[in-house]
Amino acid sequence: MWLYIPMIIILIIADQGLKFWISANIKLGTSQVILPNVLALTNVRNDGAAWSVLSGQQWFFTVITIVALGLMGYFFWKLKNDNLYMLAISLLIAGTLGNFIDRIRLGYVVDMFETLFMNFPIFNVADMCLTFGVIIVIIALIKDEKDE
Image (cartoon, rainbow, N blue to C red):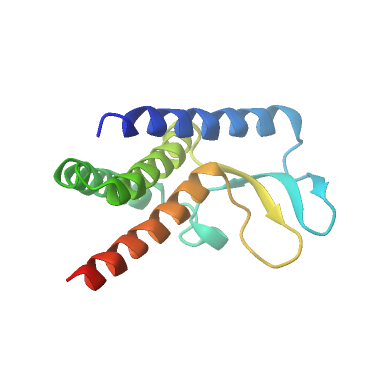
């Protein structure tokens, strides 16, 4: 269980570090193409969720985040002997805290990864942690169902 705590810390540091670098090096609202027609680094501020849903509702995100972190902490302890769930919950905690730090500190989340080949929300490292965490939870649930 304790091996996952450093992973959470490293992911949060990576998320916050990249957000700081983007904010310091790419002008707000502009992009730098990394892979033509595939990926750009874009400095945007998002005070909502994906596609700016619930924009400006910081109180809502604060309440949801605190409740979610409480639940994740409970399952982090309860499922401490299941490595697949621990990996998933660790990713979810890191992603939740990464974006929560932005919301508390800045009032918005810094996003930077823009897919150029499809219309998809611009996202960040914390969002990737959340996405992979959910995918791994689904895999763990399917695995549990098959084992029963």
